[in-house]
Amino acid sequence: MTPVQGVDQAFWYILGFSTLLLFGITAVMIYFVIRYRRSKNPVASDIRGNYFLEIVWTIIPTLIALSMFYVGWTSYIGLRTVPENAIEIDVAGQMFSWLFVYENDKETENELVVPLGEAIKLNVTSLDVLHSLYIPAFRIKIDAVKGMETYVWFSADKIGEYDIQCTEYCGTGHSAMLAKLRIVPESEYLKWLEEE
Ligand SMILES: [Cu+2]
Image 1 (cartoon, rainbow, N blue to C red):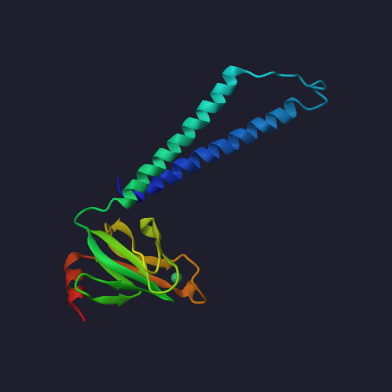
Image 2: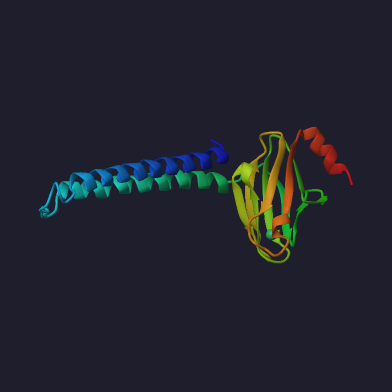
């Protein structure tokens, strides 16, 4: 399973349970409001606890919460475990653009080009204030911090052009701090890498 599938699975799993609980609890609540309204049930009964029910409503939500943690944790592991053969590219955020430095010291601004079929590791930092590198198509987001290196990785498995955004408010030009990720065939990448 790719990290993208892992993140999506965790999202749908948690959303599914949340939706189920929302409608389930609301339905029971409406039923009780009608069934035990004052005109039908004028004297409230005094219930002194029920071990069986209390155990059930403790254990089931605990299992649900733990399973959500498990699904989230395993997808997080996928996001943090970089394949060994990954191509490394240095990324620096600055007010208000993204800089990319490749293995052969080629530099680009607001354009990240990578070869199809490779794992890409981005070593992220900032030249000034806090920024955050966000590539929604690959479900990755990481803070860019001056004096510190953070990382993300993704598998460049589909040719195309994808958005890169800054998602940490960094000043007046924040909303314009956009870049493009281009995934191209390997041969095109190698040619591009050698261009000035
Ligand atoms: Cu920014």
